[in-house]
Length: 206
Image (cartoon, rainbow, N blue to C red; front, side, top):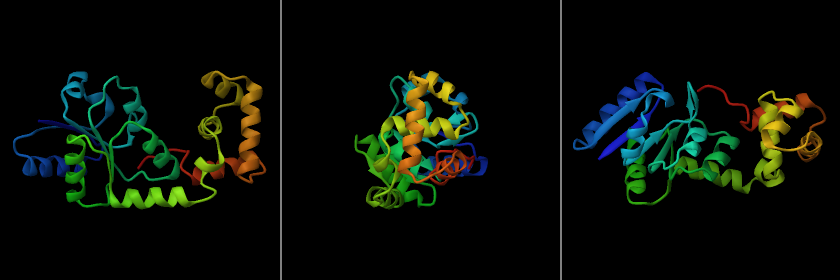
C-alpha cells in the first residue's frame, strides 16, 4: 500500500510521517512539501492521498480538480472558511478532516476512503451543518456564476479580466456583481471586498 501526503508545515509533516509509519508499518509512506514535488507516477500508484489545501505553490482543491484520475483523497487542513467548505464539498475528495482533530479520526478517514466510502470528521460535519442551516449563507443566496464573479473580484481581477476568464460578456459580469451587492446588502466595492474576506473568498496562507 502507498500513502502519499502533501503538507508544507515541516514539523507537522514529520510528525504525520512518523505516526503513519508506526500505525501502518507495511505501507509505503511518501511525504511532500509542495504540489510540484509529487511525481505523476506516485499519484497513479497511490492508494490514498492526504492533501492540505493552502500550499506554497497552489490550492490543493484546485490541483485535485485538475488531476485526470486522482486517488482516493483525504483533505487534512485547518482551512475552514465558508468558501473553502463549499468548494471542498463540491470537489473530488472523498474525506475531509480538520487538523484540530485526533489522529484516530484521520485513521478512520483513511480506512473509509480505502473502502470506497466518504467521510466528514465531526468538526467538519458541524461546520457543514452551520453552513447549511444559515439562511443567508452565500451558497443559498448567490448562483454559481455570481460565486465565480465574486471570487475573481476578490482576487483583484477587473470586470474585463473576469469576463475573459469566464467566457462571458463584460456586461454580464457587471450585472452579476451588481446582483451580488444587492443580495449581500453591500453598497460599494469596499463593502463587497469585506464580505468576500469574511466568507473566505480571499485565500490567506495558513
